[in-house]
Length: 453
Image (cartoon, rainbow, N blue to C red; front, side, top):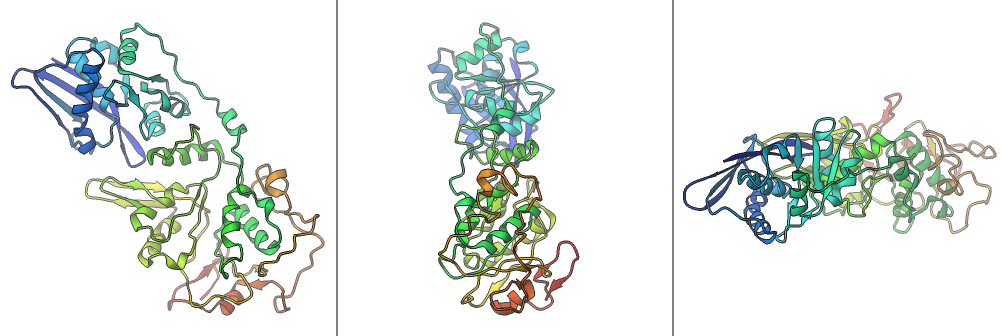
C-alpha cells in the first residue's frame, strides 16, 4: 500500500515542504530511502525501525521504499524521522490516510520512540502558516508558535502522536505571548553604565549605535577596546518584533536556541576568533549554513584583533557590507541571507603599520571630530549625560528612541589643532600611519559621499 505524509526540510534559512511517500510491497526485506537524502536521512532507517519495535508497533518484513519529493531537493537533518515512521503506519493501515491529510510532521526519533527537538522550527512554522497544522517536538512548539497563524501541536513520543492522529488524545496547540517575551528582557552582563572614563570613546559608540554606523578602534593593549565593544549591544535600540523573528530564524537554523527562549529579544553579539575560516564567517558548506555575519543579524559583529584575520576572510566581507546580503552559490543551490550587523556603508579593510602611542582613533565620517583619549583611571563626572544610559533608559539606551543621543551642553567645541582636542578622521589617519592601496577610498561619508584617500 502507498502512503503520503507531509514533512519539511531546510535549505539555507528557508523551509520547504517535503512529501514523504512510503510504499510497502512484496519481495525480499529491504528498506531504502530515495530522493537526494544525506547521510543523516539515510540513517533514519535504523532509528525508525527501532522506534517502531520498541513502542509496540510491528515493523513490516517486506520491501519498503521511501521517496522524498521533490526528488531534486537535497534533504538533510533528522527532522524527517517522524514523518517516515507515521508513513509506514499509514501504509500498514494502522492509521487512516485522512488522519495525516493537511498536517505536517517533523521531529527526530530516538530508539525508545521519543521525539527529539530539531533545528529550524521557526522557518518550518513560517512555511506552514495559514495552510496546514504542524506536529513537532514539544521543545520546538513555542518557537514555531511565535509565527502568527500557525497551529503547532507539541508531541513527546511516537505513541502520543499516533493517538492524537487517531483522535484518541486531545492536544492543544502551543501559544506564545510575544509581548511577555519582550517585557522580560534578559539582564545584560556587560553594562555600558559601568564604564568609567573614556568619555570620548563612549560618545563615538553612542553615535554609532544611534545611526547604525560601523566603528574601528585602534589602540594599545589594555586601552578598553574589547570592554567597550562588548557593551555596545546594551545601548542599541530595543529589537522590533520583525527584527526578533529574523534574528531568531538564523539562530534556529544554526541550532543555537538552547536557552529555552523561543524568541531572541536581545541584540546578538558575535565575536569570532581570528582563526575563523571564510565559510565560518560568511557562511558556506555543501548545504549552505549561516556564518557569523548572519548570526550577528540586527546585532553586533565584533572582529577582535582584526589584523590577525586572514586577508581572504576579510575580503569576503566586502559584498555583504556593501549590499547588506550574503549570496552563497553552490552547485546544488544559491542561497541569499540578510546581513545587518551594525548597518551603514563600510570602509575597505585597513592595514595598520604601527600602534599609536597615546590615542585610540575611531572609525568616523571624515567631517566629524571624534576626540579619543588614552585610558583614564579617573571616573567620569557624576552629572555626565552618558552615565547610566543603559540602565535608566535616558538618552540612548533600552528605553530611549532610536537616534536620540545625549549632548553635554557645558562642553565647548575644541579646536582640532589644539593639544588634546578632537581629531577629525583625516588627521587620525595621518597619525596612525595607515597604508591605503592606491585608488581605494578608505573612509566614506555615508551622507555626502566625500572621503579620504
